[in-house]
Length: 339
Image (cartoon, rainbow, N blue to C red):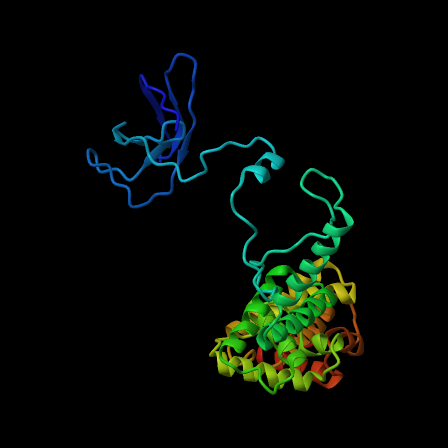
């Protein structure tokens, strides 16, 4: 770390004690400071809780009295510098993070498909044949046990469903991790791999509070949603997962977009659902999609953006009877003016 002598330190402090500006008088250098959070730091001289770290020298200076509390802090970063993304990639000494969607977590080696050496020259025919045989056995050795084959098949199904549903990589990694936990507990034997993979995705969606239903997952799978639900309950019970209660407010933006309703109506729907949550007893034990559908129907009347119950039921995936029942409950319990 570069050590630059400091002749004097100038600190400007706002009325509330926060640092506005800090500079050091050096021959032709002005150093910037990095204010840290109000933390456990306490100045041994004045007892203040405001500290300033000078980036270039690593000194920690009290922002109130100017006492240098600590100097030449250890830099946890790399010893090299990089000015472009290519330089950073070339100089880094770590690989990609662990990926649960790979049967070996991405830690195995892989023989490339380019039949060239490091200088770019093509292999001779004999060398190419030898590399081909090595590549074939290397691929076979990666999936050699029944557990690896099970993981490989499950990860392929998880990747396919995630792609069909348009979900992010975070959900995919969480679903793969939940499936691995089932394998560790030896709960996958004599059970459907595709059903457990779909149940893991649904559990990951619930943990991430992403509004997707079992029917949406079953739409892209060859299984019935009741089968996926049964495996999901098995997964939650065996892994002792504490699933968050689904919030109907998470479904509102999706349904509003499906129905092509104005954004101002969304705020009214959220207000109705918030009143239902504050009331208590209206949210627990009910399908969040049905509650969202009933609130949308109420908001459509209050904001004069008329939508039929059939259109709402089709967009939310519930029946018209459910929309009507939730609508009547919300109007009666929340004492909404006659519509």
